[in-house]
Every structure is written in structure tokens, then in C-alpha cells.
Image 1 (cartoon, rainbow, N blue to C red):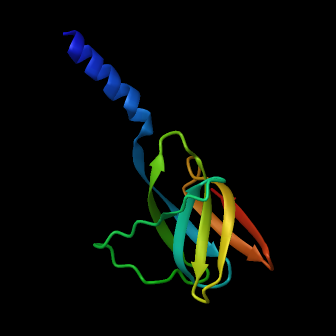
Image 2 (cartoon, rainbow, N blue to C red; image 1 turned 135 degrees about the horizontal axis):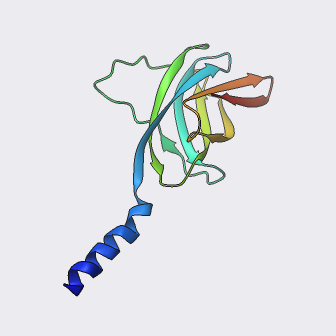
Image 3 (tube, helix red, strand yellow; image 1 turned 60 degrees about the vertical axis):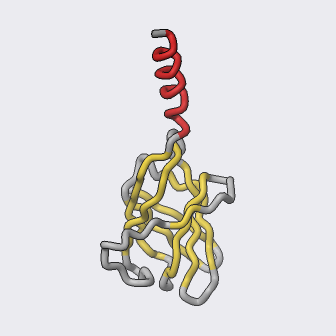
Length: 120
């Protein structure tokens, strides 16, 4: 009986380390087509690629003004993520500390070299 309780306790203790399947809608307000999207826990630099569902028909890029659903494995308890977009012209931009837990829609924008995020 003690062995079963100990195993159950270990299983529960390990649960917070598991990742959750998560998504949000990214709105491209950057003014140019986005080729790829990656996420990293804020400040970590550990980039996670957007998981593209092969059954969903998706264009290769997200046009300027367009929307795409971003799918990834979110670490339990992690809400702030940096978003990295690589554009069709091979340049990239990073938007920092987007709160993906409280917002379903994230709009990324560029004004010159200034990257801004708005969320709802």
C-alpha cells in the first residue's frame, strides 16, 4: 500500500513539469508577410516552432493584415512568451513578453524598427 501511495505522490509531483497543448491567433500587423513563427518562454531564447497541423490547409505565409493560429506546447505555469517572426524577405523580428494565458488574439506590429504587441 505504501508503494502505491509513494508512486501516486511521485506522479503528482511530476505533473507541473508537463506541457499543455496551447494556441492563440496571431494577427500580422507588421506590414510584410510572415514565413515562420516561433515562441520562447520570455527571455529564455529557447525557441519552439509553431506546430502546423498537417490536416489543416494552410498557406506557407501569413500575409500582411492576415491571421494564423499558433499551436505549441506551453509549459505549465508559463504565460509570458517572446514571439519571433521570420518574414518572407528573410529578416526576423522578436516581440517580447506576450501574455498568451489571458489573451486569445495577439497582434504584432512594426513601426520602423519598433516592435509592439497589442492583445485581446
